[in-house]
Image 1: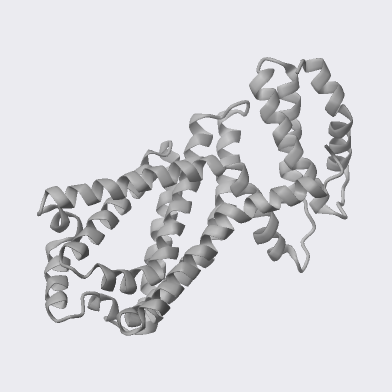
Image 2: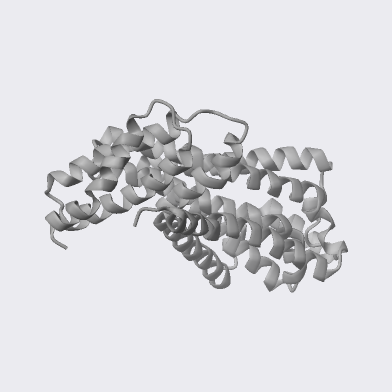
Length: 325
């Protein structure tokens, strides 16, 4: 499409957007969110086909103003928390969805590296998991309770300690994004390699099913959340390395602001994983296999739906409900 035709087709929409931005009080913030979605799509199109045009500068300016209006100037109300988790955050995850794909690729490759390394090097598991852990687990396997390590300590003590540790890992994956994403990739690489070698260790000793029942009850949410936090860290790194039409500092500020919001959305799942590990996983080997797998699949489905499917449903609803074409 020629640039003149593109402008003519969308000019009225952009003027409407300018008018909405100038309003001091927005009675229907969801309408501005709908317009914002159209605007970022127009900006992406202009950046692709009219890179050197002033139109890109104009749309980029509108996008910045809109972002500030939506996320800074909205009136707070009793539904603000729900709106944050059910609209604002899903839109952000949709906007940055490619980093989720990158995170899954990096983590999946890391798991594969850990698995192959453990297969071809008997000492690798001890290098990653430590001699103390391996020796203790071998004793537990001999005693018929391979995941006994998860039964140590009190319920509340385990829940609190594990939750804080998982929050620390997630925050580290995000904050290390300031290294251009290299630090984030390292966090995912380490955790993925550990997971791959860890599961092979149990499979090698014939207790894979018991390990799944004792570990993945909480691990489904825990690992998935780490991958999401890794994706957020990669996004932060990209905001520094690839500022696009923004000034580098402004791009970083935007990445940090969006990243913090997205990180907050992972916390409930991380806390839920800690709760499951402290109060449920320790009984995994004692419960029926069907019940254990029901919990695993239910938690995995819940977190997968929220981060992978729901954002697309939100965007589809916004697009279908919007009067703008």
